[in-house]
Picture 1 (cartoon, helix red, strand yellow):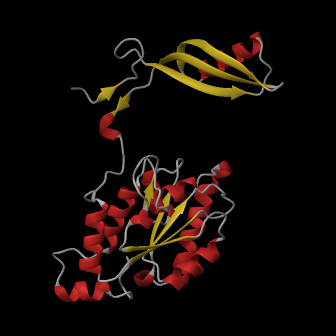
Picture 2 (cartoon, rainbow, N blue to C red):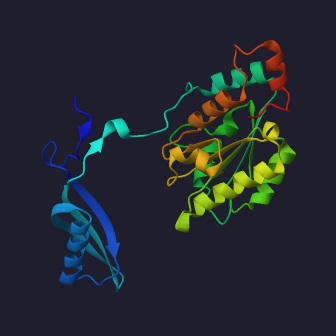
Picture 3 (cartoon, rainbow, N blue to C red):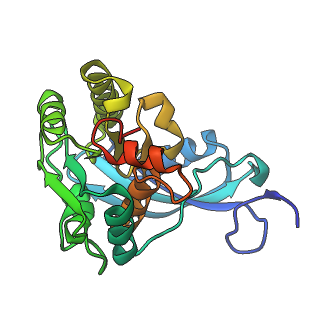
Amino acid sequence: MSNIIRPYGDTTGDGMVQLSFTLPVPHDKRAEGAALQLANKMGLDGVMVVHSHQMGDTHTFFVVYGSANHLVNMDEVKVVERDYPLLNPKEVNEIVKQRLGRKLCVVGACIGTDAHTVGIDAILNIKGIAGEKGLEYYRELRVINMGAQVPVPDLVNRAVEEEADAVLVSQVVTQRDAHLHNAKEMSAAFREALPPQKRPLLVVGGPRFDENDADKLGVDRIFARRTTPGDVASYLVHRIVPSETAPAEQQKSESQREGSVV
């Protein structure tokens, strides 16, 4: 099978795509002409406006349909694959209890001006998401949810006070790349406050993050959409808890708070 692919619409390989956008023009024929012109300049052929709807007095929402000429080489697609086993809550609790010898501490928050707690609550709150319980449900995890609009210095201070193993930050507000700026500010603050061997694992998540940008943002892991509490708990165990094959002295050292965090 070829690794070069095109979008599928009506027939295989026809390149048909559907695109939606809003233009700051009143809803009339000139507005539809503007939508067609924009789609053509984006490289779509045979463009049709399949839906248009007035928004207020000065804007129009469009859905257009057309054929894209671009090809996708699957060999060049870069994604972050899960490189650790997915564990259930019972397995997480047993591993943390047996190998770490204490509860694993997680501090979570929405930082900056972000007031949307739905993401951090879905991961941390015992109610969880989609029938899967959050990290508060795991008896061997000690979870501190600081809520929304938490200043970065306050997050750092609380993480230091609690001797956190991991810090989880959710960012939903993305205007002017606020999520990227906040993540960089957080990672810089932790680097300044703590030496590498005492620094907690830094994890960020949100719908607009690119999972490939962890190094660029200075964090250990980025979780994007459709992340579950189980994904996060399994990752924390993978990164923080000593492995069964680690030498006894190493396990003893890693089970102590000082030096237990990457």
